[in-house]
Amino acid sequence: MRRRRIGGGRRLTAGTGGVSGPGSLGVVDAHAHIVVDDLFSGPAALDPAFAELREVDGVRRLFTRGKELASVVGEFVDPPAMLAQARAHGVDHLLLSPWVQLLPMGLPAVDARRRAEVQLEALARVVAADPRHLSAVGAVPIDHPAEAVAVLEEACAAGLSGVELAANAGNYLGDDGLEPFWEAAESLQALVFVHPATRGISLPALDDFYLWNTVGNPAETAIAGAHLALGGALERHPGLRVLLAHGGGVLPAVCGRISHGQEAVPAGRGKLARPVEESLARFYFDTVTHDRRQLRRLIEDFGHEHVVLGSDRPFDMGDPDPAAAVRAIGLEPAEEAAVLGGNAARLIARR
Image (cartoon, rainbow, N blue to C red; front, side, top):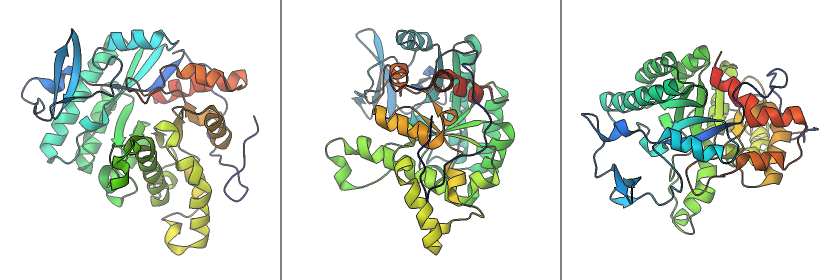
């Protein structure tokens, strides 16, 4: 497939090797959320006023601040049931990640580390019970970088593939204070999944028409990716594996503008020695675009090696049959196999 040239006529490429095969995991959904029971019992249990699991008509449902999380339309707690729902749409393997609102942000170091470790331990048990079909990324106390490094090391040692960060984590991802975390993530070959924090952008207009989700979330991801790229972490650590949710949000649409800003305006140059395009090209993206033309363009811009299947289960804004969307856009067989599972299998394996 011929890629569209953007950013002053230069192609976004990043020397990542050849085409991935279909891999040993089959079709892999790399964007599927889970809530672990362990967060709701024991000494580290969440305050029920903030979040709790209740049984409603025989199904465990999540309530936040006393209201049911109505956007959940599939299984959220039981991994085998989640896998069964995914298999109905031809998915063989799930890469599970925490619900972003349960990432340990805005907490004292001790509390943040404990919330991260509770999820880490629970997810490690889930993966160990069925490694053929389930993998996971955990949470880290990113507000406390030294603690975050320690928990990242624990997560990888426990068999997790990496960790999830909220898009607005750590005073945004290009902040110099996160350098120890990025250094450790590269060294461990850990996958870092960046997901919008939901309502991470405070604008009154976003309160209308569900715009906080349809527009706010993609904008959050774009800000996070641009900040990380211009902050220099991807240039300093070319081995980083950073996956952006929802097809990178609106980041792909503004790559040319970011590149022009680097060339035309001193403040837009960032902390880079080389063109920002080279850093942007190192990101990975999931397929949750809800637009087949946009998905094809994403693959053309960044290469099929940098796109992985994603559904955003179990939310109403997800894609319940993401494999069908990939198969509908006419990729070459090797490219299709890479997007459906080969790329994700490589990221999950870490080594």
